[in-house]
Amino acid sequence: MTVTKLQLNANKKFLCPKCGRELGLIEGGAVAVVGGKVDMNAVLPKHTCESCGVYYQELLNSGYYDEFPLPKQEKLKKVLKTGDLQPMELKREADGKCTCPRCGERMDFVEGQPVRIVNGKPDMENVMDHFECHYCNSVYRRIATTNYFQWSEK
Image (tube, rainbow, N blue to C red; front, top):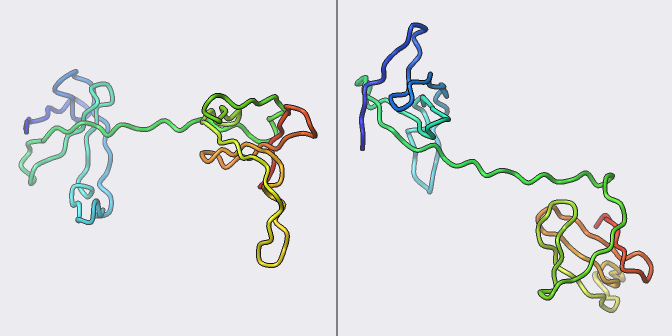
């Protein structure tokens, strides 16, 4: 645990002790429950330095600040709009999967099955071969008897 006293610049903003840049301020929010325990640190304001990847929180109104690493932000994958998808040729690889053209994740191949009766009605959903992507909830159904597949609603 490293505690430091942060310096102020002429604009009364805190400076990063590592790189000397102005620190950003994230106001404190509501009390959070993390892992079943109350996290009171969410109430305290955070002084962040994006270039160093750290943030500082004051200890008990003492004027001294403790340093913590900024949490890593997971980048969300870009998912294409369904209207932008044209029919395309999809082939199973050795593991029985294929790359999803919409999001880039691995899709499962579902082989055609006989018609099943569900709640007294025929279920035609899995009668034809198709690919399913569980990441973006896309389904690609075969066009006639070709190797071309088109995005389809479930």
